[in-house]
Length: 327
Ligand code: BT5
Image 1 (tube, rainbow, N blue to C red):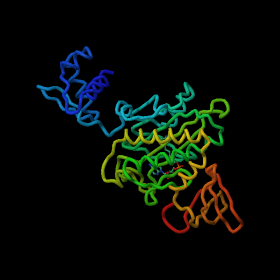
Image 2 (cartoon, rainbow, N blue to C red):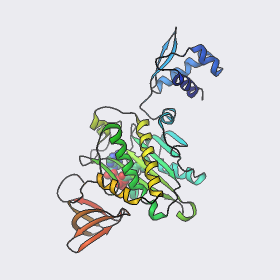
Image 3 (cartoon, rainbow, N blue to C red):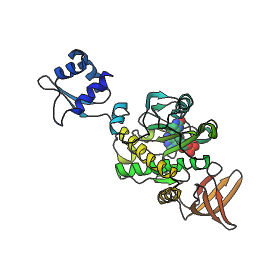
Image 4 (cartoon, rainbow, N blue to C red):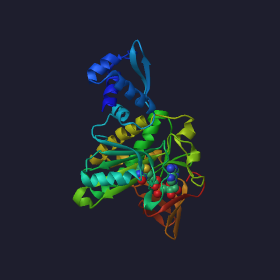
């Protein structure tokens, strides 16, 4: 794409250096007028490009909005993000990723949408996905049994928490199993789905939704939710957030494939909210009260009750706090 070629030329220039229209035009074999047209499109996409009649062009700032070229520039992964599909609008990035997984099934393929019309949570719950959020799904074909593959959603929680800490010094907590919360309000959710029969294809789609660059008011008032913009007071580079999460996730996946489960259990536990506290677990009509002791190596919740220790796997139960408002 000519636009990407122009950007490549601009970043290849030394800092503070201008690239003349003449040079771009010769290099890409297009007219200077055509280049000017593309520069205008790039500016509309959020690139800040200085244009001086005498000196030429200079790239001053890349957009904070999702942009395939910028994302590729900041990605440091080996496999995750090897292929990127970025759409303006999708029903659900998980659904598109599943379609792509069925067609080609490339490990590491990433699907992003600037907004989703039918974003999904677990159990067909709705996931509100306005513009400015990070709505991202990754196709994974890990070398794991299904039981171990289910740990990938725990790894995703850890990858996101670490990324927000690394980039913004923001400490969010994990509410078992996969909700990310700040001051008790949900800021991100994770949806892992197996594609087809595990033994046949060993493919899963990992969806991650993070409320980033939009005000809290864009979500339904009834939700106990917050956004990064609300917490920090400013917008951030979505491409950097995505790239950092993918880097962390790639590392966590390598640990899981190397069967270093205790490492994942510990780093998950460090970030958990409610550990050691009195909680209530709801399984259908049944209520269990006890102390939240931690998670097992498989990610099951361990509850110390009057009748001894009980374990609950994710998906079958709901967790409630008995004391505070953070759940
Ligand atoms: C989740 O489900 O938390 C998983 C969310 C996964 C979303 C990503 S976005 C990219 C990919 N494509 C998709 O279609 N999905 C994934 P669950 O634990 O079931 O929580 C769902 C509940 O969270 C809803 O019932 C609401 O109460 C609440 N909720 C909905 N939208 C929210 C938002 N934007 N922020 C915070 N809470 C929200």
